[in-house]
Image 1 (cartoon, rainbow, N blue to C red):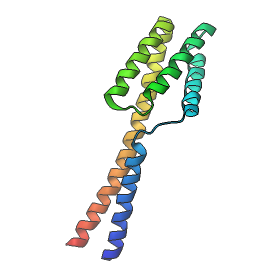
Image 2: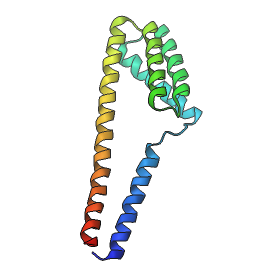
Image 3: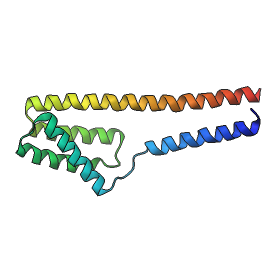
Image 4: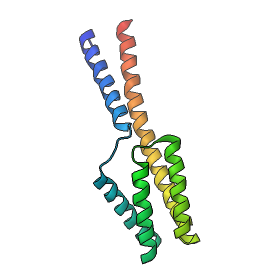
Length: 139
């Protein structure tokens, strides 16, 4: 592999890493995106937790309120809002429904973390390959 090819490959991987980092940044969603997300979350909770009509109304309000509050927020601020939302759900759900909600939420977060870990590993492996090739060619 000549130096020009190496430079192109290195620029490609740097560009790819930049794109992945940019995609991982939080971004503001439109009001319609937030409304849709809250409606889907409420529908899922209604089905999985067998919510009654009064609970559906309250859960929908909570989901919409916190979708807007949490938009563009990350880290400890997101965790704080998530805890506040859970406290609101606890007031509306029965003890059994709340326990089931917490289990469903944990499963979802575990799947999300696994997906994120796989993505980070793929990007890290590609970057390591480029570094190794660069070392080989510089020697």
